[in-house]
Image (cartoon, rainbow, N blue to C red):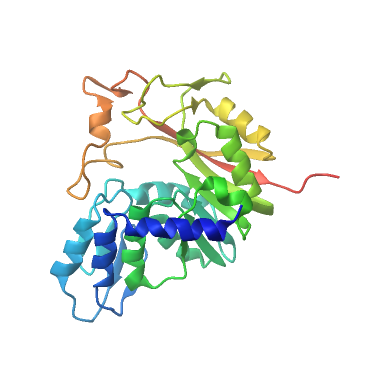
Length: 301
């Protein structure tokens, strides 16, 4: 696969009629000498003069903002997801110092910005979304990090020029109609020794089975399989991973995902049964997530 040719083709996405005005607004912003502060809120601060109305105007052009939150020179972007809750839950389970790290489905790069705390050797985000890359470029215009953002997906990992020590894949697996094939792609993206930090929807149960939603799950149409933990483990072992470690499980709450002025459309409260919040509007169990570490080790000769 010629990834460079693919990159050239996908760069043309920036000229789409819904993206081009965002890129032009981004290019019109002045250079600002900013400090990047890493915490639950990823913040930019400066002693320079800032046109706050222009910053807010550009930020609102880029709605919806899903992952965050961010504070841009005093402008608080209250994103749909309180992403620090997931990050803080996972934080005790990884150390990225001097490692080559990828984030698959990285959205606007919130987690990538946070991962700089560990001083990894490299950080690469993968997400085939022109909007999310534009949001990332907006933040990084001032943050000036060395994070690399690729308009590529998990299917490109086996052909990527770099192999990784740690790959994060958070909230992607259930969007794939062939989850074992995707897990194999993650496996091939690792060095001979490496780990994947994975999070996906789950259902309770001790049997090796999965929910296959008829039309949608929690109003999301492209959810194909929601496994029990034993079924997920089998998928991962079939993909070649040697170890499967459950780190945490959690029920998605209205504190973590909710409607704000920075998104368009609905959020979690609209996806659940108004009479029973333990069920989705379709009658399935409400979203619950499992977080696991998958380990790749050299195969024994």
